[in-house]
Image (cartoon, rainbow, N blue to C red; front, side, top):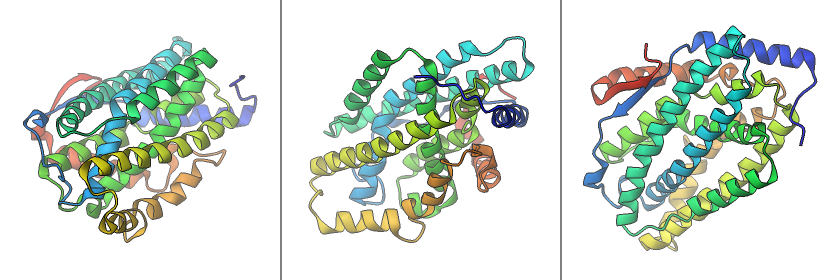
Length: 308
């Protein structure tokens, strides 16, 4: 399963992108969020809306296993960086911050998911994810495959993060504490959205494999998210209520709908010249993330990483 791209000019552009990102995002602070999830939260915390509550809950259920996979992927891949190259050294610094932020996300969503378990929800997504990870490692020891998968998931999470910060309607009416959790996560996902991608490019990762794994991840992510949401709704007793699926239709395809707004950016990842920081929405997304972090600085404490 070769994963190197022999296109010289393309790789030169990729390396330039990676160096530019490292210079523009020289710091990735690791923050501790002051939030008490152990105290519990309402069963329908998203303004009483069953579908929206259980969709976001489903996403949270995937994060501890997913974030650990991302951490393991970048940690293994960074061993191939050249310590003598300044751009590679800068990437190593960003990878440390990425790992710290993802570890914090894993911890917070572990607490979140513990409350979901107390509420009687069954996290089946995590078991499917673990099984797929095990099969991947049985199939190949090349860390660039896991890194390409990480790049794909990071793109989808960056799109969700951007929408969460940009469109108030996505969390409108939600419990205040849960809005804080999701917007904090979104802000940090926006901060490190290009780290895994730049690492993949710096290591001459194949564009063809990047696209193949993205198509695979897109299908798996969509199916997993809907399956776990349906499992949650069954436990909630609202799976077969017409209002549940009317809410789903509005959430995905209505005004500020998740799918309707995200689809163009979903497709742009397939372009050979794609880069997360060259997305037209990237500057505004970074500004929104920075503004939220600044406005909520009293809830955040820098505990590690490369703090400014």
